[in-house]
Amino acid sequence: MTRYIAHCALIVSDYDEAINFYVGKLKFKLIEDTVLSAHKRWVLVAPQATNQFSLLLAKADGETQKKFIGMQSGGRVFLFLKTENFKKDYQNLLDNAIKIIRKPVEEPYGTVAVFEDLYGNQWDLIEPKNI
Image (tube, rainbow, N blue to C red):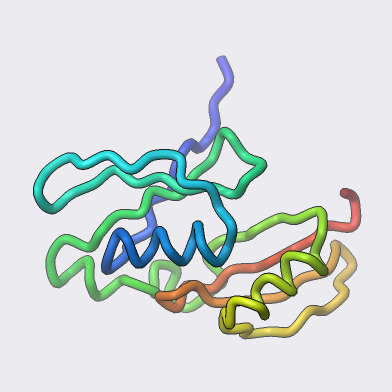
């Protein structure tokens, strides 16, 4: 039996705001947006090429969860966006005024830059050398 991580919950302050960022700016696809109740939706987004892993955009419910918006990993890089075309995807970040934390560098494992999502979570954009 194959096992894999299917979703990772990402705490957001607003569903539509988060969808606009991930789909509109990062060019992810909206996989599902299902209303569960008056205040809760099941919203999945993922990079275009993946069918196994997606982010569950989870609207913060209460003050405790709101404290973690943008700080789900305590200020470390939280998610890693692997690409086969670093130059194109990095330019997309710039074109969409996405905050760059660390400009591109060549590392032994590939080309990497760090950016922030709309809430301040840090991401690596990485093109591994072995692609």
